[in-house]
Length: 189
Image (cartoon, rainbow, N blue to C red):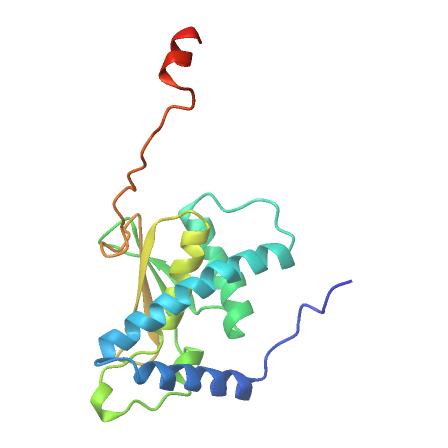
């Protein structure tokens, strides 16, 4: 029998580890945008691992094949496992059919950060956006997720399905093909 499912990390432990992570990253960056990019990259790696862990823990045998299905999984099951509560809402954009929004009125990662003056517009919810992108990537959906603070408080996570970041797209790797058999043996085969 495995560990109980309701095991949680203490909030003080999470806040300490997260603040250390942000402080460490601030020594390696020059702007708030660069820090957000680094947090997004870390979140993407975390998201892929979280997806595997949730599938293993919940013994899910089938993966979501629809956009709405995987987004519901993210905004409910994954959100609750990671941040202790479900997201406030999942909405589809009126302007674009491939755009969705997950709304969180009080993101956990923004509660423990006091932004220094030189990083004015920093939004640490970029880590959460990276986690969402990582889960989608792990579920074989190409998507881009960005975090946007709301005026009334909270954060909107804008998800564009089918759009990968141009910087992350790689050229196909060229592989040199060699015949398995020598030329004289291939004529006989």
